[in-house]
Image 1 (cartoon, rainbow, N blue to C red):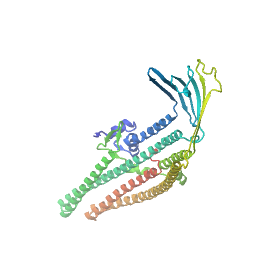
Image 2 (image 1 turned 45 degrees about the vertical axis):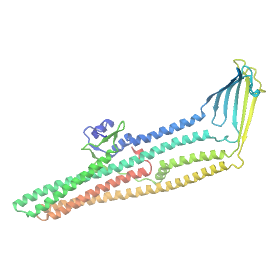
Image 3 (image 1 turned 90 degrees about the vertical axis):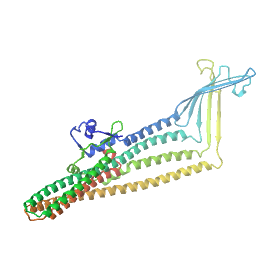
Image 4 (image 1 turned 90 degrees about the horizontal axis):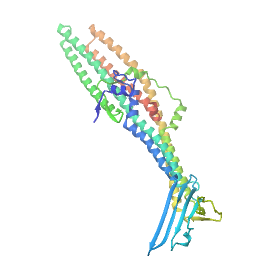
Length: 467
């Protein structure tokens, strides 16, 4: 359930510069509120924490590990064997594993190869993958991909916020347009009511025909219907705008009656400068969607390197230096002749699994590269389309503004002529209808122009950075 609160109270608490009595919600402040408090913005920020957690989890593959292996067997009151092996393993980034430990075995039926002195043996050694795993293994691949995933989450955050702010901006300019339409019909109804009263008085005096009062009255009724419809649209757009308004703690808010958008005059004061082509190219290349796809390609390249590494045979070397634990100083009595070592080798004859998986990864890379090329071309097209719309709508606003001023002059002249009896009520109404339509179309053009400005920033992937 939403909590109805005064919007200006909200903004005065959140942004100190927003006064208690101010009921104008500017576009910039609205977008800042959306970016700061909207739940989708909070969800976008959670993506960053997901990336950090993924890196932390992958780093766990390189955590040192304590281990203990104890096995004993008793039968007919005899201890067949007791085998203890405990120590510490330390994996490294280069695939080498270092370890140290202590081994002690006893028992009447102990395998001779497991026998140790009574005090046990201490050992320290190294395990080295000479073949598969020397340049890349699963642990290193997981960590590098997790680090890239962390960067991907940052780009995804920008994408989500850009989408959110675009939808919020569109809602604001639709709200702005509906408010301007209400203002137009407010003025139109007031003028129609004043004219009706004047015509009625003149009809009572016999200066005009009674039928003129009927026409004036019909005009009043039509304006009232138009005003009601405009207010309905404004109420609906206010509801739509409220969806984007949230307070601290994910508390949904509603627009209080009396809150209005910034004025048409203040809106037209904003002039966006033309982009240089070099700047456009730079912004497109760093677009969050492009950056995300490039990072995904790097992840696939790591996967390719891992699959290529797995085509090599497994060839592991292991060496342990061992010594009897006869004193506190385990080095005492150590001899280079005390050691054990081992070699592990295996390799499938046809390597069909490895070659197939590598081929699949290469196909994924080709597919991702094609997606990247397509995305680059599409973004460039959308940016150019938005720029064309902005240039055209900017010119249209300027031209149509002059046209509306001309309509206003014609209307004023027609009213003066009507007042001195040189015009008819029909012509005055026709001039007014033309002026009303012109003001509404001008407001729509201004909103279209402002939408095109934000659309340019959105298509360039920098809308989030503006607020």
